[in-house]
Image (tube, rainbow, N blue to C red; front, side, top):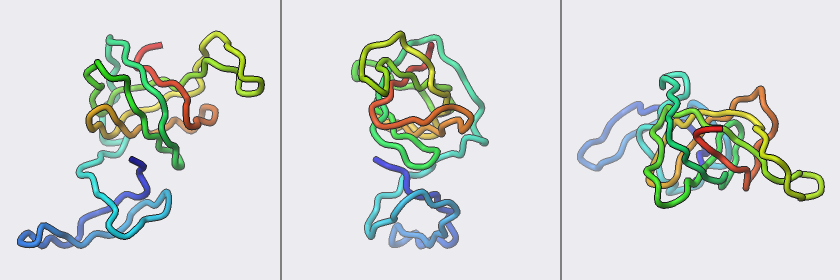
Length: 137
């Protein structure tokens, strides 16, 4: 999945399982009948946690300061609030193997199954699809 916007519920219509919402942040094109996940917490609301377990994954998509991460199967995925490290194992210019190096850090704000949404720390380098992710570095 890809986070394209943040919404704020304005009016509820419980009988129809619907509500009226306004867009508070937009990161991409919102299409008709798009899925809405509730709740997605902002990075500011979640305390940052670090875990001892080593859980790895890959970036599936990036939109603005958000990344969709798919964690490896066979692990219990980390919870929202977990600090993650984005790292490279290939030289971006010539695609040769290099010693792993941290590109930037981030924080998970939403986790569903093996997928998670992470807010990328803007002070680091650019994160792109295929960038490796880990909970410990």
